[in-house]
Length: 305
Image (cartoon, rainbow, N blue to C red; front, side, top):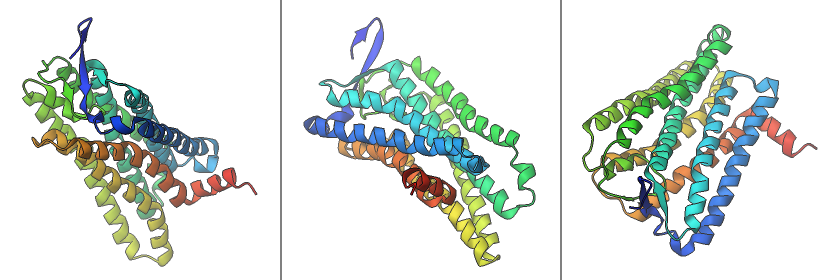
């Protein structure tokens, strides 16, 4: 721990495996960062520019991809700096801020995926009611709830954690997450229970809701014609792939924070890099290739002939 003007600093212990090949890791991470910004921003810009993409489903996709841009912009510059540094440290307030952004945007993604599944359910199962249900006002409400609710609910444990005494100043990871709780001298029961409630409300419930809506869609479309089944599969499959992918990767962080077992540094590094590299790059590729209208505009942009 270093103290400068009463600011507590943490040592980031997750870079042990990176030190030998830091220049290689820097090139890989910097390239990934540029690709994430370019891929996600391109699709977001296409959705903003083209009026035929001003539909609820594409607006939610744009919000999802915007989350990836925001998260990467918060995490990558610090990581790139740390990769080249001899000593990797972060102030405790900066660590809490990083944790807040990471969890706020992660929880937001689950709520956005739930909103997208509801949009698909209404579109396919209740097409006549779609214009009256998915109005501009309701879309704005979904977006505000998806961003504001996680931010408000996660502010409380951050404030509590900022006032808890630390007994350990070595953080086992490269980005601050729920594992910060293991640095406290005494695990706050309030934070722990509150965290479980938030986990259920903003992660488990949205995932169950998404699965329920897609099961309903597949049951209804199974009884319909082949064309309806094809359309349902075409629009729902990308969302399901993204949900499954993100749920598996995000579950890793929760396991580390909740279980007493110390995972090897290499395992932590690999899984953390998957969350940071795989998911933000995976989303725009899935939506760019699998969503027909977005794919058309991408082809016109890159293959105008």
